[in-house]
Length: 112
Length: 112
Image (cartoon, rainbow over all chains, first blue to last red; front, side, top):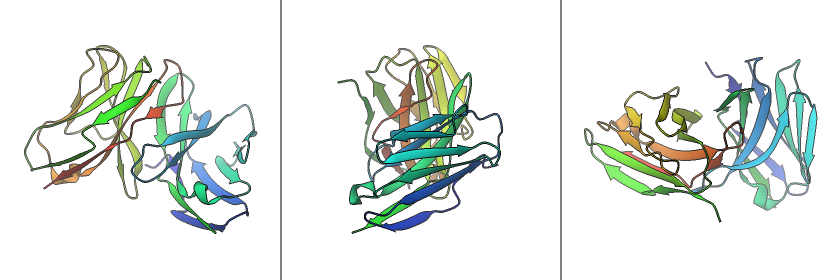
């Protein structure tokens, strides 16, 4: 049972445009969400997170939106740059549990 | 600088052999995790530890074991390697009570 889902395995976006990566979850107990970025032959690196008490968190070019009623979050990258080409994983956890449940990942390709 | 390292980075072994993958972190984190990454499955949790002498099973623990004798290390052992265990393995660590996990560079294991 996949509790965190990323339904788009891949996404291609022109350089300078907005990239939107989506993630859905089924477990309503989840109250903390993270996005990780992964380059080939490297480990995932933390990008941005959001707590369920917020609906938006912004860090430079990266913004994460959370819609609790829809159990949906999205990562917006504006403007997209070639260095953003990577696999992006969303992850979720709940209070008092430090384990993360990961989605299957979305491969983002930025076209110059 | 604090870091998390994994060794070896690449390993080829034969079915039935015992294999141990090393993970060492200098963050002084209480929590350590082992994941495997496979296409279509994202990152799946194998085992985790919240401190010395503490170990717990994750969602895909069959055929794997861990032990935690100190804060810095969490070795992962495949008791009798199977071809289904061919994968990329990532170790991660986090602070007690923290959600953000820091990942190692990964070990690519091939079981022939």
